[in-house]
Image 1 (tube, helix red, strand yellow):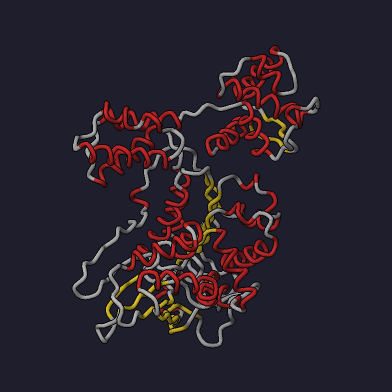
Image 2 (image 1 turned 135 degrees about the vertical axis):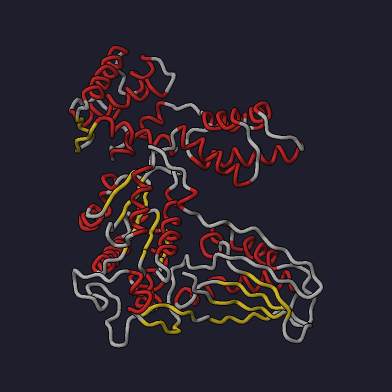
Length: 513
């Protein structure tokens, strides 16, 4: 990570009244917010005077190796147009790739590839700190970074005499900032161990619905690993970035560089594991990458939005390898965690919030942490606008629409969709007349959850799930309640589940929307 190439635009003798931020804004407008965020989000951009003092140059940090070439071919026209829009007509652009120092194998060592080691016998592992200090030598090479290896710092340097703008920077996510509670304690402990002793608990898979802190833990794991083991190399990718980088390297001849980047990292982190479903070629590459990294005793951390049992299409071979490490669940934050998040963020921002407001926010915004951050942003903006301290009355008025949205009603169709999605059941199966356990148990579970999460009447629930009577709904509710009390196993689709686990799984889908 941290590899970069530069895009340089010399503006001749024309005046350049705007900052680099305006160039980026114009570029973002041309290619769209989503594409900009994936490939150039938080990219390093500078505007500075040229040697003759009559010109300026714009430098945009992008990728290198195959990524650099692909970005240049794909986005050069749009970037040139954006620069000319800000700098004026006649602006020339020049692209160059920047070589960076990366750890490589000693001369003569085999290159990273599927089925090959990196200079260590199988079963032996050299500690990351030792490898970083002397196990390999470093040299200046142009390597293939992951697409996410876009520089994460933005600085603007204006021409002499012009005002400079210092845009805000997102602070690195750290384990010390993560609020720990019963809902996430196991995942937190797993990440701590992985960062302290890379490779001993690999692969680590953390899973949970959106907004429970998976990305925070992934980035914080890398930060802690670098802190404890100076010189360690870490690569953080989303599954989409891994896929795109692999396909581009495959077609552009940069496959050895791509593999070297991923397979020589001491800590390899990949988010959104579920994104790989259905991508056969990428799954094979991921499996080979995982094999190569594990053989060298390195650390791999994955995150996904559901359990591995819900991802059979990843393939039996890859799932077997993933289950050989450690799996840890993150549940939606409980009250103590929600209150801790609100208090920590307010304290960090210097926003004075009394205890009754902390309690109100933590009890009103219950789905995920992002809702809490949105509520804090609203309170801070309202306090700034009115010039008044935050009070409970102000919070209730300012957050009224957010609270209503957070407490949105659940419909019977939502229950049906969540049950079908959670267990891979065909749509419409819960409304069929089938009496087999593989269909009747999911239907009974759906009726139980409908009574728990909706205001629908018994006859309405029975009518929705296959035109059944209200007495059938009552019987289903009682049966599932007995299952929970006894800790019974239930048949859902073609698999057997612990009933509490099954209920929690469906409710996770409901919370995710």
